[in-house]
Length: 363
Image (cartoon, rainbow, N blue to C red; front, side, top):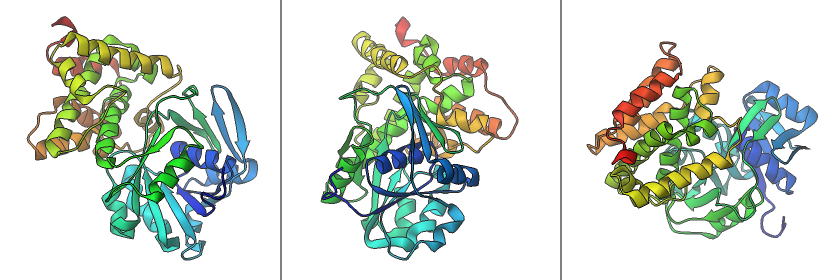
């Protein structure tokens, strides 16, 4: 790390899979990072043993300061330069409120989360102190107290993982600085299309996370199964339709332009080849033990983020009168599972296949 670039104090609220991984890597790179989390055993383990990060090419233990969430009032006023919010989407307001008193007037809160939650943060700290960060293709999971596993193999000069942008306004020096900082974790860049990229990430999440979870599949099987690929194509196309109706400049999803996904849904052979190649690339990239965040939540008996994922797409679709039967169905299934009225299983894949309409591969 070049200390001349940034030497301020960083807090990460939510030291689970994403927050812990990013915070641990930044601490290892020499940044002044404090992890804040509500899981007492996790915080205690980090304090005692450091944060252990396990990757396909090895593991390491990183010493990093950690605080219990209920200790956050002890943070001195105006002492934090950057706060990353990495909690579940439904906890965004709570997490922001924990540290808003400690944020410097010149500081910023960065939403390192899925979906579109910047307005929640801005309601606490103002739009001028709100930034967004999209993390794509991280494939991290919290194995237990103080232990985070990344299921993705490290690829030199691989696809960009982090995109940082202003919630309101063009590119800025602080966005460039944050992108440089996050490049210590994985490939990162600044963007002036935060909302378009946010929607692009939502498309990628909503076509994989909840879908694989309701079927009871790991990500490797999901990306490698032809029936799953057909449903994922339908989910992507539905969400792209909604984004277009909302006026977002959706960018590539898994490296494929949004228009190509729509052409593939219509049966264009060349477009289908591109989509299937992209999905196969993901199949090759993830490890056998990779599971989605939604699947992890269901396994732990936790609330899922369905209302910010497939449910969010379906709700926005209703606002702009776009049909999204696949997203609506997955949202309903997930809610039933959360309530104990259903269970994951392959039968849901069969139902979703039926809702997908004509098979583009057979056109």
